[in-house]
Amino acid sequence: MENNQNDYHVSFFKPVSTRARKNRNMTVWLVAIWAVAIFGFQILLKIIGKPTPEPAHTEFIQVWDNVQSGNADNQDMKVFSNSVLQVLAKVYIKAEHKAALENAFSWSIFQMVEEEDEQLLGYVQDFERVMNQNLSILDSEYLSAKLALEVNVASLLDIAAEDVRRAAIPFSIKNQAIGQFTDENKATVASAMDLYLIHNRSVLTDTRFLGFPFHYFYTAVFLLCLFIGLCWIYCVRTDKIEMEHLMS
Image (cartoon, rainbow, N blue to C red; front, top):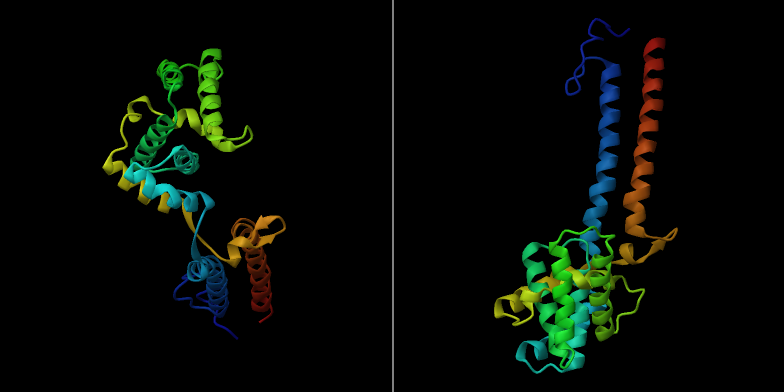
């Protein structure tokens, strides 16, 4: 019969009883399964993923040389502006990238307008003025200035009313960034477009499961269910170990 004098001496790394050793081994196995499920999947995503550009990046590349050299026509500028706006509408952008992209967007918009430039400039200045007043986002003056700028630029770029990029337009044009698209910002924009518009994709990200991209379903749903399942296994196995110990 097992010596029980050390039953109350608890040590995970150096268990002194059979019961404690069984519990330790089971815990190690369950943690190993959990670690493989998380990190193994992430490693697999890295291994099989291939850099894939968004359509906006492909369009950007097609006109970028003309924009840099100053040979871009209005259609090139429209494509360029739409591509840059695609990035500016993303949730998070690094501060240095955001400043350069705002310069690119503001400058390109005013390269496309002629007689209307004073009117559009007035919309930009009006919105910046109400922004500096820290008005409520529900204030009628704020909403009016925002809508006027948004509608005019969206019309210029042929952006539909339901396009989510429209909401980013008023915050992406800066009065002080209109005049010149600097060489420094050109270099920053090129690297930013690669960073935000090229993503690793594979069958794991493109396949949909129960309406979700598989990689999202796996991390947001399956791993949560797996964790609950491992907790249940731990409880059941612990009870079994305890019963075996009591009967020994």
